[in-house]
Length: 506
Image (cartoon, rainbow, N blue to C red):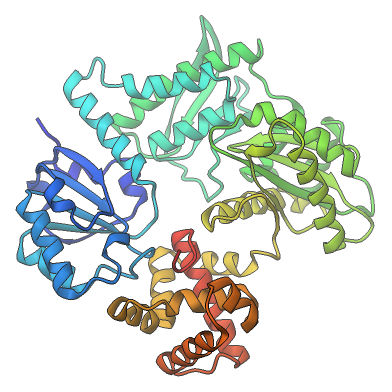
């Protein structure tokens, strides 16, 4: 029996997309497949019963009539539902498209958060496998993915982060004494509800795996298989399964389990890295590609960091290798950046260089009690860098201060609303007239509002740029030379990137 759309929308990847139902009854619609495409003529290529995923790239510049035709062709082909990611190509689902969907009784869903469409397709395939093979073999796809990480020896941290993705909730591993060994990369406030399963290697109990979320049938299946995979991973790496003092300290700092200055000092000393007086402390996250092994990269990161800072403390958290280093008698931002730039360059000469996405550096702290916050901040900076597409750079807390300010105070819907309020007139003009005013504004700000540089980057004559900027000012009713206007527009462009990970228009 095929699943209903209501069931599909409960899959972890769909939930992560923050689906918003605009029309249709998901409980009454059965789904044969999930497909993604940006092709405008996709209606003629469907077989019926699909959820079609789109970011709307193929709909840019289309007239209202063409949007209606697009929906008609999908409905004629028997498409079950259209799910459009908003914030990348459109601030919201176009009105005419929504009206056409209601007219043709096509279920329409807005996805307010960006999630790789491939993950949604994979989740649906796994759901079909569970349906068709029955409960006895329903976890095969789960097991194969987790086992692949063990065979590749990607480390416990990667295994826990994958488990968290499959379960849709944070995951922790504790040893037999109850001490935290490792945790998934989630650093947001963690729910107190959840359940745990034993991790064993043969007859030996090695610890407990906790899933911090409501107990569901899927999460139980994930937990059972993940516990076996973690047991295999621990058995391969160490007889006891206990982390090193450095790794344990990094993990507990990352999840906020250590806060007092005295306790952090003691744990640093136990790890062979005493806190020195009058030296500020630095935390950075060397974030790696998902397919890379943080455990394998750890030695290279340690060697590179020690070359620049002397003794350092290093541990793995999720896809990142966290570095704790001693600074100097006074925090000099330029000196901090230069030192971590040396770390990045040293890593570029190693076998892990191509896997380094970003070196994310937190603001220096003067007291050990602030070290947990610094580690969490470095991981957050790495997450922002991934979100906006930054790669191969050193990114400091100051570099993304505006990004952090916005994400502290706004969710996906609020970011979209803010960007739409400020930039909406340009977007609508571009859509109706096939112009590139929004892209022009984006490039102009990226070039520091230097007109010669902006024109060169856009590949247009300076007079053409002047004409575009004049039209932008007219549509927005502002002067681009006004400092406060510049601040507002810059923040709106940042909100766009946080929502999409892309410049306004590629």
